[in-house]
Every structure is written in C-alpha cells, then in structure tokens.
Length: 516
Image (cartoon, rainbow, N blue to C red; front, side):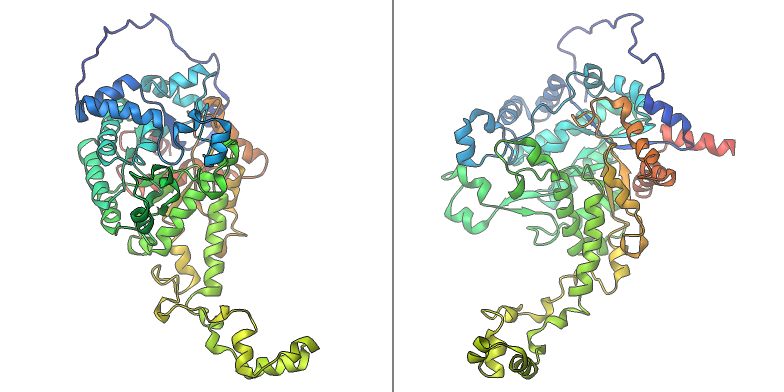
C-alpha cells in the first residue's frame, strides 16, 4: 500500500538525538547476560490519521466514519458510554467501569517511543531487549468489534498498517496479526492474508467472544431491547460447547507455522463488574480470560488433536497456570474415567447404610427411619445423589482430551501453553516450582514486559525489575534465562524455525557460536 502524505514532510532537527547519557539499568543487566532477551509483549500505539488513511483505502469514507463512531462508543462490554452516565445511572445499570488513563503520559519519551517505530527500534536496547513482539493497541480490541463489515475492514487495515510501518525494523521488532474468530472461516481468511501477503509471523486471536443466547435472543430481539444485550449472552471459548468447529482454524495455524497468542480481557465478568472501581475490575482479569481459553481447548481435545499447536496467554502471569495444571490433575484423580464410578449411586450398599444408621443414629433419626431402600433414596436430600447423566457414555469429562493417565495431562497441557508474565510479576516463580507442579514439571512462562501501558512507567527498568527477582531468590539465574530467552525462543522458533532469521537474536547466537 502506498499513501501520499497530506502535509509536507517536516524537517528533522539537525543533530538532535534522544538517548541516555549512560547505560540504563536494564541495559546494564543485558550486558551481563550470555544470551539474547526476547520481549513477548510490547504495546505500541498507532498514529490515528495514518490508520484512518489505511481504513479509507480498504473500506472507503463510510468505514472511516463508522470507525470514528465506534471509538466514541467503545468496544465490547466495557463501552465508553460509562462516561456519559451519571453516578446513579451507572449504579442502576450496573455499568462496569472501563479502563482510563492507560498510557504513560508523563513519560512523554516513552509514549513517543511506542508510537514511532524508528524511535522504538533505536531505544529497544534501553529496555535490555534484543527483540520484541509488538501488540498494537487497536489490534488487541479490533478482534472484538461486533459489526462484521467494520470488523473485517479495521482488522485488514491495522494489519496492513503495522506490517508496513514496522517492516524496516524487522531485525528487532515484529507486530502481531489481529485475527478474528467469529467464525473459523473468517479467521482462516485473515490468517492466510496476514502470513502469505503481509509476511506477519505471530497471530493474535480473541480469547473469547460474547454470543447471544438463542432463546433469549428470540424473546428479546436486539433491535427492540438493546439494553439487554450484555445480559443475554454466553461466552464462547472456541473449544467446549463452541458455536463452531474451530479445528480447521487450528489446523491452518499449524500448517502456516504460526504461533497463536491471546490478549483478551475478563473485565466485565461477574466478579469484575464494579461500576466505580477500575482496579477492582482489572486485578486478575487477564488470568481469568486465559484460564477460560486454556481450559476450554484442553477439555475439548484441541491439544490432543493438534499437539504442535502453540498458544501464548499474555499478561495473566504464571500463578493461575500452576493452579490450573494442578487442578486438572487433582480433578482427574477424583473424577477421571478410572475413578468416577466411585460416586455411582448404583454402587451404594443400601443394606449396609441402613445397618449403620440403626447402630449409630440418634432417636429422632431412628423414629423416621424407613426401609433400606427408602433410606437410600431420601437420606441425602432430594435425590441429589441420583442426578446422573442420562447417557452413561458422557460420564467422563476428560474423554475428549483423551486422558488415561496423569502423564497425558502433562503432555496435552505443558507443551501447548505459554504464559506471559510481566516484568515485575513475582508469580512467575510458580512456573518453575517443580516441587509443587505435578510430575515435577516446569511450566512455560515467558517474559512479557507490557511496555507502552500504565503497568510500565519507565521502559528502561523492565529487565532490571525482573532481575530483582533473581537477587531476591525468587528465581534462579537458570529460571531467568528460561523466562527471557529459552522459553520465548522455543515458542516462536519451535513453531517456525525461520522465525528469527535475519534478526538481532540470530546475530547474537551466531556471534556466540563463532566465539566458541
């Protein structure tokens, strides 16, 4: 795409460079390392007027107008209409408070850095980073745009925009491709375009989509009851109970050798829907969204059918990952196929139960004690014990995942999922706790700085913040290397061996190999 500038090119100030007088704290840490550092999550901000030019080129002036209107309204459950409501209206509608003041405004240098590709390329070393995977802001929420026509135009426009503006800096920076998943066909089409036509190497998919509950949608049509839309939806996580069979999309991702990532939110969900407190809604929401997706794909057997599929779950940390993995093992050991029969009501020994009541129950109970059969049916309240699936073949919730032993859980969870942990997140230690994680495994945590958002007030400090975990004894130096290099390298290059070809990472590795 070639776009002419609507204004004359401004002259660059002669001899002016913005660089620190001395090495940043993170650069000093990088100097001590014998391996590259890969940042799996650095946020960038698109330049609005140029993005609109791309939108106009793909969808025309009407698409630009629709885009501007959509930005005013906001996207998904956390719409910008919150700001137009009075405090009483927010409470009456239980309208979740959306994010606000999300960018590092006071640190103007950093804000400019994440919005100007040349400057980001120049300053990346100050964060201690050799290579970064970029998450442009529009890309992260464009996959949730509800209007199908607008969604396709915006996604195609931002993917083309990001491929173009970052192409000159591919040795150190690569942007993700936003991939919609409202249908598998839509996802496949955009994935093929992004990879084959634009040369993008990483995909960003939504972690979930809100879909209308069919019965309620019939009773309360969207046009007649627009205020009820957010209350009449269910959450599709592309695996368990999904509206579509997404196997063709997973197969296409494996075929194209594209690692998939997700950056979806859980704000607005039941326990994260305060109408007054953004922090209440924010804490833990990425982990909730990531857990829902990982759990769904595991139980639906996606990782069994596609063992080479790799999914990066960003910004949720590793605490939820360790808990989820342990829960999968613990639940299977109680309710997996070899064990679920322990709870079959037909295995109850009614005569033994009756004898035990006769021997040990107190008078008021004995006065009401009937036959052994009566006791078995009423003793535990409203026949709860006999509420079983009509189809006894559906008793094993782990069947689609094909779990026959604990090792199967390990093999269909650990290799497939990678967990993005922010620079200052101490929960990353859980990923490396082999004394706690079942079967003594390490989970695949990788470094996701989150630079460009309020989480990082100074990008020069991110690697140094993570190194602090080593100095505190939270991580070993080997853990640190796994976090910032080994795991991200395996995630990308293990899927696509050519991923780092021609990049600073390859240069560092070649230089080290030559020195040896």
